[in-house]
Length: 153
Figure 1 (cartoon, helix red, strand yellow):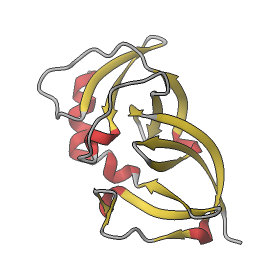
Figure 2 (cartoon, rainbow, N blue to C red):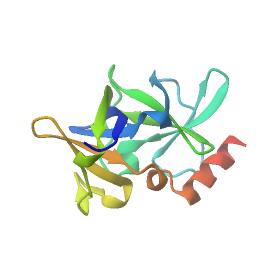
Figure 3 (cartoon, rainbow, N blue to C red):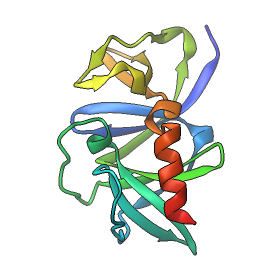
């Protein structure tokens, strides 16, 4: 057994993704999003969460996948990564799970249309269930983070 990684599991389309629980602040129902001009398409705008303005990105759009319309299951996963706070719009937040680091494999070049640079690895969970672990440093790339932080200032 390797080290256990406590992971928040969410879905985009039919795929399941995970982010280490230490980066997740809260999981919110959809909130009113204020559009911000001159931002990349995947940046949906900002939300006001308990008096704090937080940029929100649509993960499907970030990965070049088809965005789905928000449903009752849609959530905004609030992430804190370094000094950046950001919301990820996902189709559903499913679970909290402990993943054995020994079950995590290097991602192939492309998984479900997503380039490997966005992925930290693929974890085998239970019978035939695969969980895609996100590489937050790539998903929240420095040059794009600077753009987002300027939005907040």
